[in-house]
Length: 320
Image (cartoon, rainbow, N blue to C red):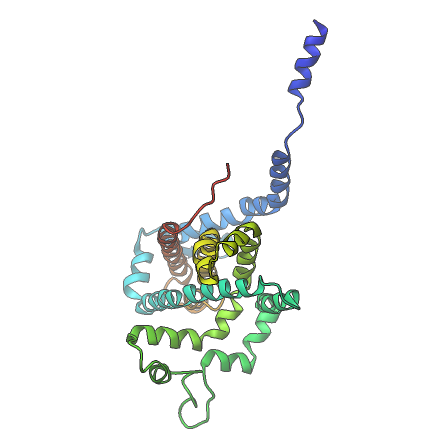
């Protein structure tokens, strides 16, 4: 009888599995963020929502009082401030240009840096250096750098009333290069925009490149050996093996790039909202809060749309 009871107690005290231990360790690492989010960010989000639907009356040392005015701040942001709508449109157009270029470039560089070659670790570090340089104090220093201004403006001011060139290349250069090919005007303009924005694209591709590298290294070498034995070319191996296996990482990097583009300090919408908050004359805090929430909802909608479109082409390997 006692032996049976001891067996039952032993079964109840079965040690946790390795996955359960890893899950608990994961919560330990994210706990500081969770605590900070609950204590700091959630109250600020609630206050921002209240400001966007209200008018603030400053009461001196007594603080402030909120007067509920409904959707008036949102109407002013969308219909009274034409520059805000124009800035939103320009931001979306730039996003359509940047996201495919960043994802394709980072995937190409990840495939190149995944090959066996001399100094591979050094080349990987070189391509990740822009990610480090684009953060913190170094980024603020670079904003006043003349070379950075030249790369972003695309030309040198000669004092003759304009820049010496419109960029690294222009539409006429691409048209002459592809003169014997049937290339649409839209594609030519897209290529011109990508080449003239190559400095920014390289700077923002470091994290995506590392994610692609981790995905490429998770593919079993036995699969590539089987393809090679069957006589598959490198082109066929890429489209039949590499691209499907790496497609979940394409979805992750696309969403990451969209969020990174919308939240970067160089984003024109973020700069405009900050300008309204600091120098606006008509309810600057309330109006900037409404603009921020309009922008946030737009970002959510675009992320949902991108996820829906990219998910249709994602291949998930079954693990039986």
